[in-house]
Length: 321
Image 1: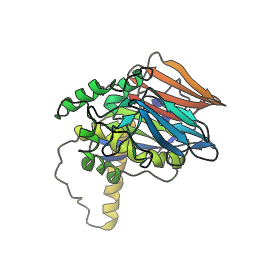
Image 2: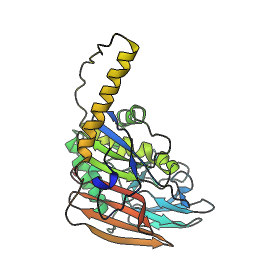
Image 3: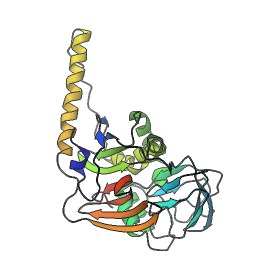
Image 4: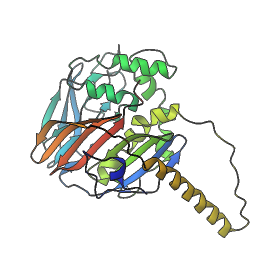
């Protein structure tokens, strides 16, 4: 497979990251990424907790781990029944034992009252189609700032034109969560490339296999699963192998796998983005730097240590609605 650094050139130095055999289900293809592990960084379910909602568009997260910095995933959101669901427009760094307030969060369920409680920590990641708009609005205060984009997304997918992301995340959840069983994370995997159809959709790199395991369901089902659900091809009749023996059957299976790898490798041969990049440092803690990265058709955020990425969430902006 092509080196990851070829697909995603500067400004993110991805030397040392390796790609594995792709997995494909319907319109969604996932290419696993293996690479260095980074100590001292708390995975989302290991210590990061929603503490409380101060007011609409204003919430607190807490790093309850005894040690280590929590890297808040880009565009994380929380859902609870009977409450106004929220999402963050930016990643963040939270020290051990620290509670941090986010006054620039956004509500994703227009018209729903009630505050999220700390009792339930189920989280998602904003769908690909909303991520560019959310990133642009990261410095804007206003709980309703994403409602217009959510309404456009709903309308584009044949749903009532309302600022209710619940229409997709909850009501379509049985469809979206199928990605979790149709695809699977592999041992030691720290990230993945996501393709919808034959188009690059996003790259996710995390500090450790445990961190990536925490992110697997929110990423594959919601961040990229929504676009894949809409692009799902019509099922084709299964064509049985013609092999007359077990050895022949294995040979045909290997040929199928090789053809799939060759097809995906051709997608990786071209850089996902080119031209000028803009890198804007957002915050720093100890030796960690959180930056927003924007390029031609791509955007996202990266956490680096000594110039090397420890976390990256970069996505194509071509799916924006």
